[in-house]
Image 1 (spheres, rainbow, N blue to C red):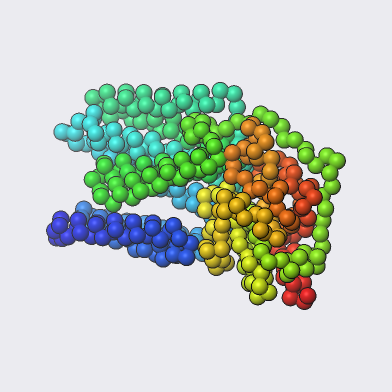
Image 2: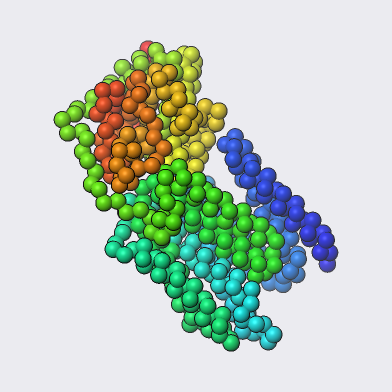
Length: 463
């Protein structure tokens, strides 16, 4: 039998590797290494846990590990990066469900132990893990339905929604108190707690839309971490404690950062998102959107000194990050300086656009932040927006009731020249008309984004 000291050493090694892996994930060029380190560290932690607990039913465990590994590998290879938010939401929900199941098993075991006291720290951790795990599971399910287009991405709201969410949370706390006050485990009350958790998880994310979505997704990630953290307390497992703490803390910090960037009251999102009542104005009345030909665009790009590319979600849908990279390489050959602006709310989840660009080996050194671009926008000869809409909408700072209000704004009204490559003039994710399409410094290339870029690259080569 392996001594407890050796077990602790391996847990320490695994913990250090997790921290290193997370550190690597903060840099795009090291993200792949970070993932490999994290995978190895978690594999080591699982192996140590099996040795520590002298597990007997190894057949079932290894079968589950094999099935899970095959499913993970296949999903990672087959799922397109544009569907990564759905896949990550699924993984997040499964993590919450797993923590709930292990906590439920611990609750059942209490009834079989003669000296086990129901009102104890362990019971509180069990109920907390179930509560947060179910919220993560049911909320992630709503996220998936929204991302698949089954539910409206802009959110569904109804009267007294925030009051219902608040009442649900208070009821769950009250039911937990009744469970702990019983002399023996009450399964019916536990099922009621699970039902309340499901209701809150659904109605928590159902109304969240627009730029509140990344905040809500980060919250759900934090909830799954909390569920894992409480499971670690239940089973006195160091790795579950550390993993849950890191996931819970990172999700919460990310939620706070996004709420701060978008000037959103975080508690308002927590109890049901933001409800916007003002209709979208139609700025384009009396204005004409001006198109530009592929060859004229090619000439402007080739004669520019500094070019900024702003990718939007349309780039991800059409998988044109490789074409954008090819465009960059050609322009660099002609002495053009090419930079990128990755808006923090581009894509469907935090970091989505960074992942898409890194897949095409676009250097992180060439990626700028919104404040950086606003400081140098007068020195940029041409701005090319690829599949972008809401993130380049100047309306975001003009109406406090707008779904875009508070989102970091790119001062495109100060730009010398803007070319937007987009499928159509239809409103973006927020449903708001974009005034920038009708401004004098904007020209549009409407149609299929991928074919437009391919033609543009071809024209630049032939000039």
